[in-house]
Length: 382
Image (cartoon, rainbow, N blue to C red; front, side):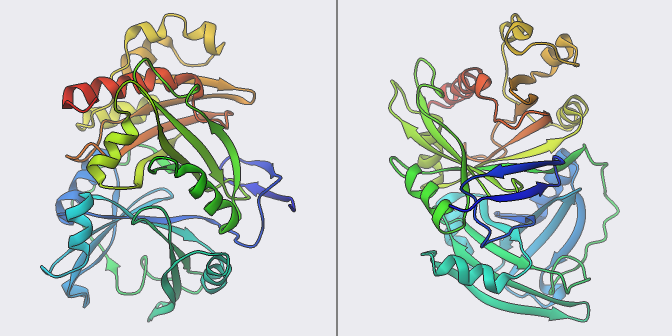
């Protein structure tokens, strides 16, 4: 396979992926759209708890009669929260089956028509034919394909558009704008798939979208006394898009992946990892605003420096906030996971700060999954 050498602007280094192809150049994540039961209230939550800012709105006031969408932004992260307004709207089926959750992972490209053609000719199932959307501020071209479960990728070409978000939206003015908490961009997004489906979807990203396998973990890497899972991390050529794909593995009890699939009723996005430059300040601000994080036992920190070596952060401060630390050959990272942000035990967020490390916290897997198991046991789902 050909080699691609592209600059990762988020991390400022050059990466070489032997298997990454150039037929689908992706500039970054454009937006993530969640279908939710009440977009107005969900927007208030993400503004209050996560520090997102009002950006755009579409609904009856803008000529959209069947749904409303609130667009929130923090640095490079854009969330779209969409709710149907009519009883017969197809989004209701998604909500009934899955509850609130990610429907669209939108990818920013130079040519949405070419992205559609390149992926569908390689076997992707079409979701949206290329369509031009325009208003007085220019035009956007969007197209889309299906991926695991009911999740879709939409390719967004916006080089000729100068308006707010997309045509059909207007700027959302709000007098309520809590300050941001320091979230910068989406580091990676994790998909949970069913038994023996991980390789199928890893191959989909490799063959259909030209991604390369960055790393893989088996049930020996990701296991506790009771549960296990397996994962492969797929990445595009420039490293800006990283999609770990998880599947269950056999264990004594029900794994977090099985719990997710049971309550989500199928494959879907398990968590969104968002980057920060100061995890202590970010987590502290989020906790003060009511965000709940997984509990990490104090014993985790007893031999932390022996495991990860010298770090800049104070151990007591990390312990106070429950921040996990791991190191690879290129540096270390700090990470912390919220509890599910929905009533169903499905989607959650990861807060991550990278100090050189390119990995995903393998050394923390056991502590993390034991923390998740404690929550599963409280819900009666372990």
